[in-house]
Amino acid sequence: MVTAASQHIQHFVRSISSDIKLYQQLLILIQQQKALYLKFDGVALNDNIQQQTPILNQLSRSASERSHAMRALGLTCNDSGVNKIFNALPGHIGTQVRKQWTMLETLVTQCQQYNQSNGQSSAAFHELISQIKQPVQHTYEEHSF
Image (cartoon, rainbow, N blue to C red; front, side, top):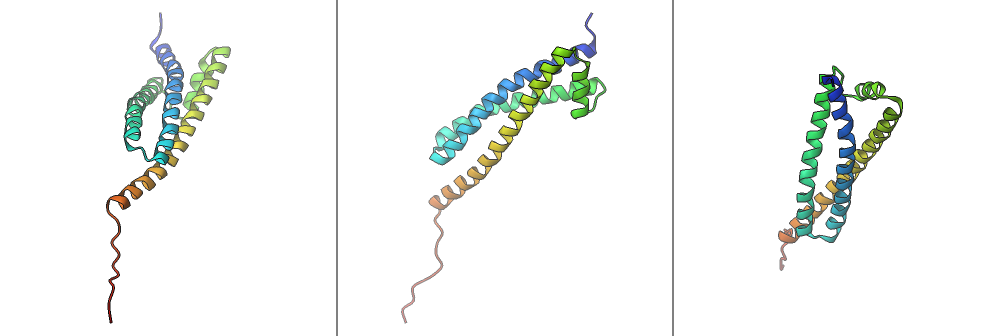
């Protein structure tokens, strides 16, 4: 018989590998997004963002489910709680899951860095578009004396 605690741990562990795949997909899209800002391709940029949305929604759900599992296990939602789960796993599985967790953390960091860079590119892109659509009117008037 599988206990509730065992089910929470299994769900937590399974979610890591699925999130790795999602973050790998997201990283590609975010990298493409950067190139699209540089090409000023608004249509492709919008399409790219539309592709990111369901991935981000799933990652958000997954993170919430992991947090719920940790709370159900009476653990804090931090590195200490995560390590308690990993320590409860059999040796070779625990080692493999720790490696996956590290990979997931690396992907999250990479996505955050690209996203921050894209935010700066987005601001510049929107500023440029705004200047093209509404050029600044110079307030200097020619006066003849």
